Amino acid sequence: MPPTCSQVPNGGEAQGIRGDPEAGLCYNRPRPRPQPPGRIGIVKLIKWVIGLLVAGLVLLGTAAVVLLWVVDPNEYKPWIERAVEEATGRRLQIEGDLALTVFPWLGVRVAGVSLANAPGFGPAPMVEVGTAKVRVALVPLFKGELRADELLLEGARIHLARDAQGHTNWDDLVQAAEQRASGSAPGRDEGLASFMIGGLRIEDAAVHWEDAESGTVLDVAPLDLHTGPVASGKPVDVSLRAGVRTGEPALDLVLQLEARLHPDGGFEQLRVDPLQATLRAQGPALDGRRVDLDLQGPLTAALEGPRVQWTGLRLQARATGPDLPKEGAHASLRGNVHVDMSQGTARFEPLDLSVDGVALEGQCSAHGLPDKPAWTLALKSATFSPRDLLKRWGVEVKTADPGVLKTAQLQLDAEGAKDRVELRKLSATLDATHLQASGSVEGFAKPVIRFEARLDTLDADRYLPPPAEQPVGEPGKAPEGGTSAAGGDRLALPADTLRNLDVDGKLTLDRLKISSMQLRKITARLRVKEGKASVEPFGVALYGGTLKGGATADVRAQTPRYAVHFKAESIAVGDLLSDLQGAEARIRGTAAGSAR
Picture 1 (cartoon, helix red, strand yellow):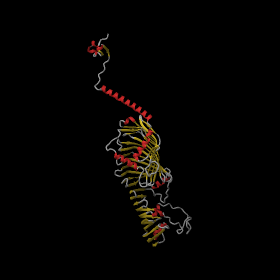
Picture 2 (cartoon, rainbow, N blue to C red):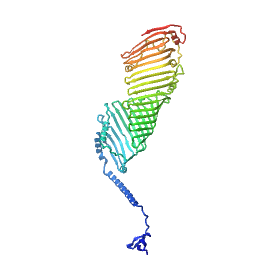
Picture 3 (spheres, one colour):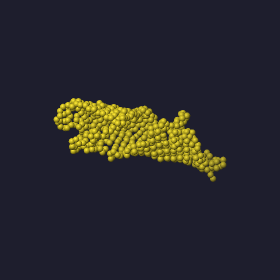
Picture 4 (cartoon, rainbow, N blue to C red):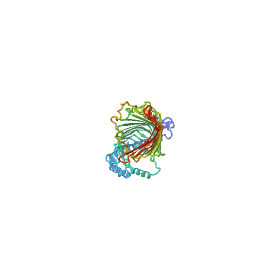
């Protein structure tokens, strides 16, 4: 017979015997371990929270099923259309069905959506969307977090326009958004704690841009944009492909871009690394040619300003087609770009440019952006061979002296603005000849051109074609196919061009050798204005004497008029004839005369 609890010391508690002493019942049971204070309460709390969450999820799931069975989202289409029209003043049409999902993703899929255009821009909608789909995880929204599936936009058609007065068809939308923003409560922060989107997929989109103010027409189609997952402070992979067609003359472009975007936490700064873009251009505007561009280099942009810093920019270009080398024409550009729109400035330095083997270095800067842009450019080339460059282009140059066209160098310093270009300094060297020049052009519709140029020494005979072996014609007989001076064709001048030009320039040549003649101190002033062109005064020192004169061409009337006059003084005829004939002349003396 087991002992009663009263027979066991301390009621059996000390020996692990449990029971009811008053009922005379005792039994053996292991004694539980002592629990730390508060642990039992925490465990119960966790169980309670888990049970509450499970119950909540069950309720939400049940509600979602009931909602999908009871509520037809298409009944809300008129309400959505009215809300958009009240907010924007534009009519919204939803022609397709609304498909709704509630749990675990709160989502909607819609088809056939269009937004009306602004008044005065035609009856066609401004925006048309074939299909749009978005899904958001429901539970994270209660924690202030956005977890979205991939956003899909298919078959979007966007029509953008500017009228002749400079108004765009989105001005009213911007004004409405600004009014709503100004009416919101200040200092209110409704930002999300975090967000994550599975990606953005835009497929088969098209954008049409028509500018009546400038006459520009542009079509972007097809436009495909894919991104990887988008999350707070995380890099985003972006892939873009777009076709672009310009107006007349037509130019077809194909753009491809692969990049990784690195935004900071507040999206105030964006780093793009790596970045690779390609552009292919062809069409009637290029006369059968094709241009391929390859762009690389990390980019950093700050929204404040905005500011852009492009370090290590690398641009490769290749052109193929008629009148170009078989392997194509090549160019490359390297350097660093800094743009600060808050200051209206941009810099490209250092600038390393290579064009078919001709290397140039320098810098370029701009200021007054974007309203009153002005720029400066400084370039200097390395020494190169013009003969080799022409040979690469398939041009074989035959000269009397095969040793010419071997070395050349170029240096320029220029600046300009919207309707003005000034060449402050141009220095060029070709073999033993040096050129110094400056000039300016103002107004490109009816250009006003001013220039000065000076050459030191030029032996033109070395650059002329080699003498051809031709049979000597009979005395007094013109070569076959030739024309006499009296019966020859009239001098054809570009009359329309001359009527629109305003030119004033000075030319100086210290020494010139041509047809074995030695000429010095050649000066000429070229002037063109309102259809009248003149080279006057003209002067040259030769063989102890001078030759002065001028020439004019007047195309203001329907029939052009020409005039030439000159005056020669104290020219040593014997020395002149000796150089022309290459032998001692039998005639001696000086010549003088004039003609008109």
